[in-house]
Length: 115
Image 1 (tube, rainbow, N blue to C red):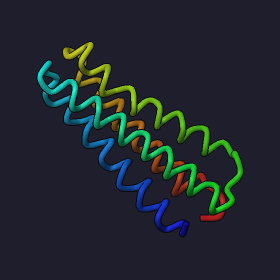
Image 2: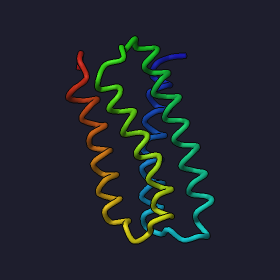
Image 3: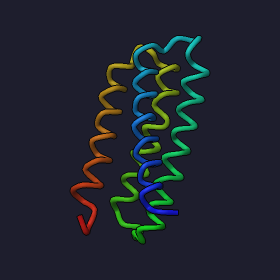
């Protein structure tokens, strides 16, 4: 497949993952739990597939920025579930999610070699 397809899959799924995570922060009610966690898992898996597909097609090595980005992905993927377990902490969780997103973007556009 063309690397552009993996790039679109990765970017769209990450945008939706961030949106679903902040949706969980906005209203962590029991009624929305199942749909939010399901959407979070699906978009997280799509981001993983798109990211690793893009990494394989572009020939990127396992540099530090890749591991930091994987850590950000894992953290962001877990935060929607944490929002339902600790709804009183959604403000601090949203700042953590924001920091993870900014860190992931910085890894791609500042730290990654060859940019």
